[in-house]
Image (cartoon, rainbow, N blue to C red; front, top):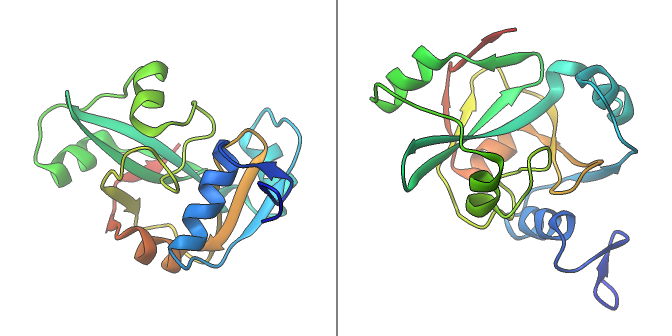
Length: 165
């Protein structure tokens, strides 16, 4: 970092927070920057990966003050019955965009567990393996990492909680 700038991003923004958090966790990563994308396929192409290697970070509300991060491969979606069974609850919901921002410090489309405002428990779908790309805290920014290293660094619970979309 030189004069408050890391990888061309000023301190205090989401991309800098995410990269700094990855470094603090000892997580080897490569930062990728690309322009706007309108689909999973465009995001994968921009990052030089396959759609299943793009990992979405979803925020799930268990109760008023209890949220979780769920890491979902790009070509899959949360299987709500599986996730409810894992968490031992009968109801889950997705928070509003404002509530998700309040909990994470990131706006929708940029949410990552790396550098989030709250250190929420992380659940990683069991199908996340190999090289993956996770959101980097800002639009058009991603971190490419090894999935096993990411899971270990985040202390994530690994479980089958998704289904193909």
